[in-house]
Each structure stands twice: as C-alpha cells, then as structure tokens.
Image (tube, rainbow, N blue to C red; front, side):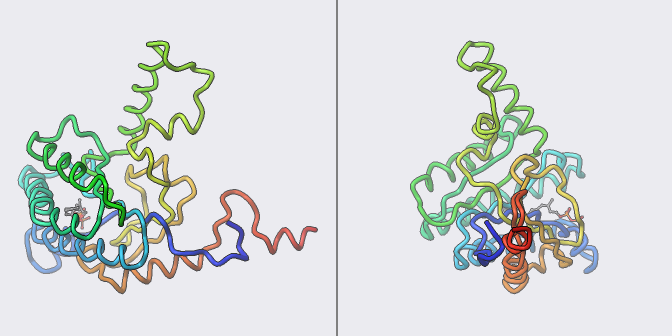
Length: 247
Ligand code: FPP
C-alpha cells in the first residue's frame, strides 16, 4: 500500500496478552486472579474486534514455553481455557465467530484437544470474525513441524525440492489460509515477540501498549487501532511522496 492512501482498519490483529501476573501482584492477589481477569478482557476484545470490522483476531493464549511455569499456574491456565470454550462457545457460534486453533496439539491433554476440535468443527461454516487461538504455540516449533512435513513430502517423492518457495512454506505453517497479521499488539510495555508468529509478522506493524492485559479495555484497543491507521506501510517499497520527489 502506498502512503497517499489512508491505511484502513487492519484485517488481522494479533495480540500478545501480557501482564496478568503483574496486575495481580499489584493488588496482592495470586497470579491466577490476573489470568481470570484476563479472560474477561478476552471476551470484550473479541466483541470490540468484530464491531470494528477486524476479520481475524489471533490471541496468544498459551506458549510452548509456558509449560515451564509452576504446576498450579499451568493447571489454572488449562482450566481457564476449558472454562472459556465450555462457557463461550455457544455465544461465539451465535455471533457467527469462526474459531481456529494454532499450535502443537500432540502434547495437549486429550480433553482439551477434544474441546479445541469441537470449537473448530462447530464454527467451521461461520463467516464473521475468525478468532485464532494460539495454544501450546511457539513459532520455532511451528517452523520445525513445517520443515518436517515438507521433508516427508520430498522423501515420498510428492514434492520436488526445486519447487519449494515462500508459498510452499506458507502452506505448511499452522496459519495456512489465514492472512498475515497487519497489526501486532503487545500489552504490559514489553517490546519483544517471544516466539510468536515469527514467519507471519515479516511486514506487520507493532504497537506496544503500556497497560497490563487485564486493563486493556475497549478504549485501549481503539487507541492501538488508531495508531495503526497513522502508520505508513511500505512493504519494502518507497512511499509515493518520495517517488514524486525522485522523478
Ligand atoms: C501473560 O501474562 C499471559 C499469559 C501467559 C496467558 C494469557 C491467558 C489468558 C488471558 C487467559 C486464557 C486465554 C483464553 C483465550 C481463554 P503473564 O502471566 O506473563 O504476566 P506477567 O508478565 O505480568 O507475569
């Protein structure tokens, strides 16, 4: 997109929901209270995204590195995901939301795996917002799994190594069929990607918000969207005014 065109609403917003633990600590509460408050923000954020005309919303719910947290916290996060899907799936479906899940399912508890599959199957034909839940997700793991699948295809003779290009790789990552994020938001003031969508964010815009995830309200989301709209996306090219100066 050239800079003379106003940047429109992002089609795909991806969010690193950070700061639940600090939010709880600041209130003298257990970290799990922060995660619970975080789920309320998830609900509100899904509604705000749909109202704003965002088509894809990806939420980093549990990373492949989060297993290293204390056992009780991991178990609480699993419980919250179960609770969210059991409690909210019917409403998401009514609201025409399509749920997709990215990440490695192999090492996830069978009941959670079944819930994730149920959420995807039940909402498969919905045409509204696509809610992409990154669960047991890590980008390096995703890329390693993609490389393994491609190698298997080559080994079986189904794929010619000379034909492998960027489009091939894009069709083996978990996000196949989902456009790359236009905007990545991270809350809590941290400014890093933490192994999130490394391949997909090559040309994404990043907005780092100082607020902690349980404080990320409708207004904060709109501020991030407004900041995105002020950006000049060039995708490696030059902006139109610069071209005019050079000609
Ligand atoms: C980061 O805060 C947040 C997480 C690791 C989990 C995010 C999960 C939820 C909001 C709830 C479940 C999600 C869904 C989609 C139902 P942190 O614990 O790293 O905070 P800290 O950096 O302040 O310690």
